[in-house]
Image (cartoon, rainbow over all chains, first blue to last red; front, side):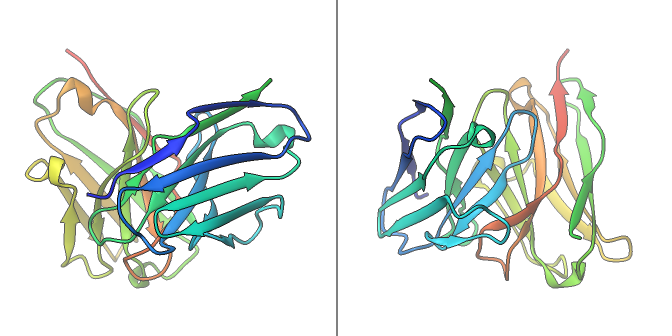
Amino acid sequence: DIQMTQSPSTLSASVGDSVTITCRASQSITTWLAWYQQKPGKAPKLLIYDASSLESGVPSRFSGSGSGTEFTLTISSLQPDDFATYYCQQYNSYSSWTFGQGTKVDIK
Amino acid sequence: QVQLVQSGSEVKTPGASVKISCQASGFRFTNYYMHWVRQAPGQGLEWMGIINPSGDSISYAQNLQGRVTLTRDTSTNTVYMELSSLRSDDTAVYYCARDAVAGLNYFDHWGQGTLVTVSS
């Protein structure tokens, strides 16, 4: 299975900050990568797919980049609603979808 | 709008089985692959399996092979996940999710989750 490693595990930031989360794959996944946001007690919500495509309805302050094995999720101008846990997910291999361990963004 | 509505919480004893349902609405159910994902308390997301639109092609995560069974009923637009020989480490929230396009993709809609607690 392809392993996905996110960093950092926790990130403390303030409203208005720009934050970046990194996700590394154990082998190349080209751009078969998605990002999800999860709030406590809720299901994950799709933010970004194909590494850099913004899901419909997701604010433009969210952006994704990368290819191969290294990817980033950037939130420009963090809003109160953005404090949550973020997961990357690879979908390069059928029957072997894997997620990163998550990055919690909390209030500094 | 797309909706995936799951059955309610379950409490099971070790060794028992659990079957969770996920009823879809707002889209053509017979066109979409469906996944199951679980999340242990305070932990990350773990993919469990995928079932194709007709229900005749199913893949499971290796670590769950032999214990998990996915089925779907096109007459009721429902997918099911059954997990047997339950252990305490199967305690988790279980989610169904829709594959965005055609079975090798991200998950664009999720159910609300079903908590399964395994305890003696």
